[in-house]
Length: 214
Image (cartoon, rainbow, N blue to C red; front, top):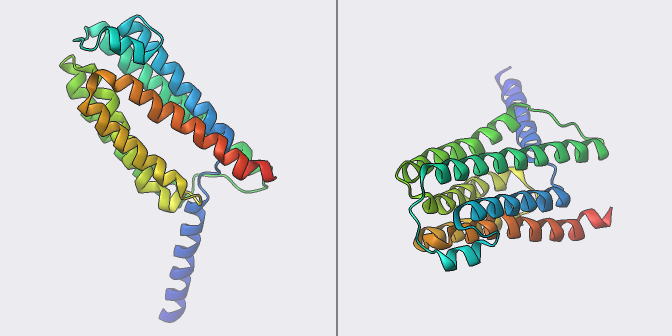
């Protein structure tokens, strides 16, 4: 009897792992849209803080600025909107892809565990961002966000995605985040690269490599 229970437990664990690996049905178009959301957010923040839609030019003409509270709220608000829009995009497009492939898309125990890991890292990162924001050091926020997002991607990639390149996105964002912290005036530009350009390039690559074959 105990042996049978052990077999059933192992079978449940195996099913849980298999389901967790399918929690995100990757779509190249989703990566591109997420990258565009990020670039739009970076342009809005750059225009408000520097008076230029180009974060590189804005940082060049005004490399050091102690933001006022209006700028702090704008930065925090734009980051929140971009994150929510990106998450909604990935969620909706993943559901659509699952339906297209006749697969079930639901929040089972495995997917809840996976999302819990992701949001734990992201929430901690958000709380860490509060300290520089409250002290007017908004240009430290892009680096912190990149580092924690990269960590979240590294943590969930081995169990969430079948395409290992997503883990390298995490490593790239961590590296960009460290650079953004070291060179804070260029934080918005590096944020745009990490969340915008990298996601767009990944989305195009994924579409050509996998979606284009279907």
